[in-house]
Length: 151
Image (cartoon, rainbow, N blue to C red):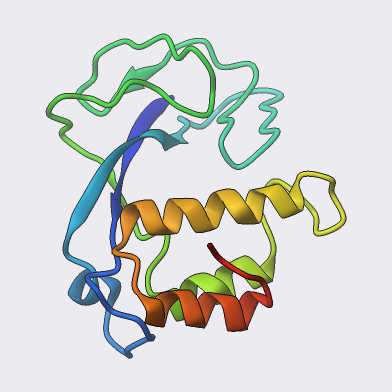
């Protein structure tokens, strides 16, 4: 299994969707994130993949993108590599408009009726503003779309 860290990109001070590629619209990396995704070599018998972040329960050999052996403390993240040969550009928030649409679609880990769903929305909004500049326009878009008050 190869673990690739994410580099999170901010909204480049854009507020609404534009019909251009993500690479054109979002060019500013803002955070090296310890979470990532994994690629698993094939030909495994009984490979069990329990979630979007856990690569497989019965995998025992892990490396980072530089080929170094790693021992993840958990399957949600790993120490960010100093000079990775490869990483994933993660456009987590995009614009306020797109972010709100993403939240309204649901959550990868919680169903809307799950007890943690509401607190996950608060966490996601806080992450949005930790990655992006907080402006009145963005707050208004999120409040209107999510039907909630943002402090």
